[in-house]
Length: 247
Image (cartoon, rainbow, N blue to C red; front, side, top):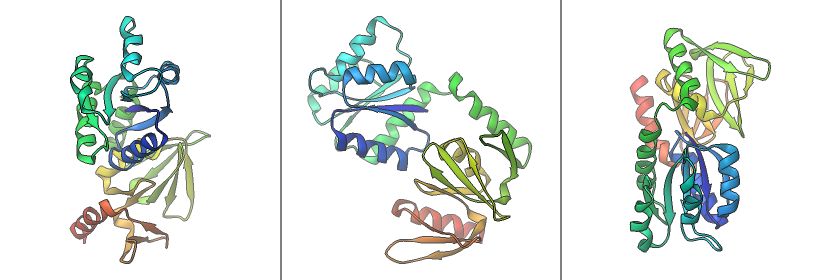
């Protein structure tokens, strides 16, 4: 789901984006804005499906943004974010999906995103991803979108994938790598059911290609190509559980 964050505080924008990247893989953050006016410009240009909207901002509040769209067709869902409890009732009067109080808790964020996803499920923007899913179920290959076209590879041939901005590097068993013109999130839903796991915000691995699990100040996995990849603290126990199942 394409998502925007509108908040006047840089640290709040950064913190929420980090939480979304780490704990809400179904979201794709396509834009950030620091004011209502900038938010309106970016919404009109980027067409998000979901907007995290801070309420208490200088000059114009988050409610002013929705007032602007009152006479227009609103094509996005809203999750309000604020440090002030007294705005809760007014937020829901604007038909918000949810209301998150700062500092935002992970479980509350995930629950809100789930609500928003249910409201926006199977919108036209998601049809390409759905088609990719259907293709992946029919054959044991995946089509990797490259600058020149498509590269077709077997799932088992993929060792790991690394996010590179809006692109992704896919590392293969033959020692080669492919640069694909899609985000890591785009392929995550396709690969996880095939035995892959996202162990870090930037890394998706083939569990069957793990050679070692390394303990230390930071948990690491060593892949069959020798690459050592950090495991986020939150994913450590889940990864160990998954590795135990395939032994």
